[in-house]
Length: 141
Image: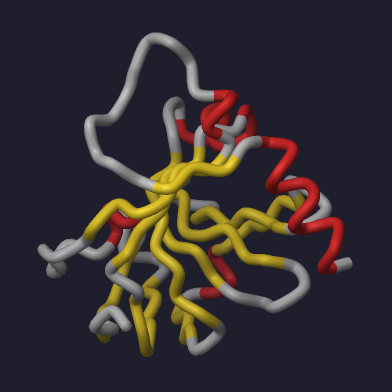
């Protein structure tokens, strides 16, 4: 079981502060079209569960980006704050928002079959394809 970390994240302008009870240091990378369109590259995210306290929530806009998740961003500075799973309410927050954590480990790459040829990672991780992810979330609905 990984060591869980307590930490705070913030958007670029400071309008939104997120306090997370437990940050799982095993982070994931998503190569799907939506993540790459949202951030200009793959999304690096940590699972933070549902024990998330948000200050400045009135500054958050959410977009329902798929049948399984919505994405939240700061309406002032545009910082990507999270994607939240619709069924469980669990938050996945960009790893870069946790500036005080140094022991993150990449463990999974989602939508590995959509990873473009112009980049690759040397990390040895588990991978899931688009079909595997759709099958997984379809069974949860």
